[in-house]
Length: 362
Ligand code: BGC
Image (tube, rainbow, N blue to C red; front, side, top):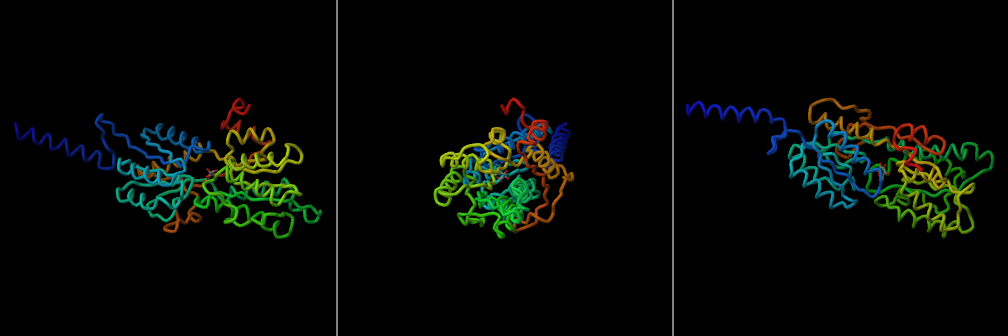
């Protein structure tokens, strides 16, 4: 009888370890669902709040548990958050980095603990711990912004017609790999017009190094714009603010108003990115000209497929295997398509698309 009992216990232990050998853990309540750690950069801009909420909702709908942390743009805080998630033995990590290159050691720790890592929106640089990357076509964001400027100001016929426009650039954070991609997209379209004199940048600041704004700071964008206006546009009009982010657009608006610009015919063409609620309201009221709509529901969906793939051995959808070299490997990626929105199409794209309701935009 004793022998029988020992055998019974042993086989129960064995079965248990076989059941959970694929990484599934059982907590004290007997819950076997896997946990996904989601590390987000900041709640200071609306898009990341939406990203986090969408990820949580979609992962939970599939039965995963979610541990989510925001680093509030503090690089060291994010390092600690990743380390903590590794210590808690989450089953998979999804990371949207504050600083794309600062997580190398923390991610090596994840790899040592067999925790797969997915890069979310921003590429994780200098690490071989990352399996997949879900993002938007970041160069495509830049070309969409620039093509909007090109078409709206009819730049292709400007030279022949003797027209020219002043322009200043407000580019993204130098520690975010997306920012350089976006800049390259912008310049692919606009550089020829800077070269032939159709676009005139009076500050002379056109390189990425000269126009990038650390941590995508709205305040710095406003300050830069104020400096440009007082230093170079005292007797001239700024026609175009080529801005890489809605947050910058808000700062630019304030700087323009501070310098006496008023909304209407002569208001500066201001671009943006993310189609935040406030930005769309500003587009409707005429304080911002356009933005780039990035459907974070779609991005979350693609990312969740990647999580499933690494945890359950399925195949995620990949549509780019060439562009995103993180200095260690070319990360298999899915690039969602960004869409330019302005007064003419926000209703169809954003309201009819169910991203914001007409009421929210009032
Ligand atoms: C994202 C943009 C966002 C920016 C600032 C970038 O990495 O791709 O959508 O506007 O960060 O938060």
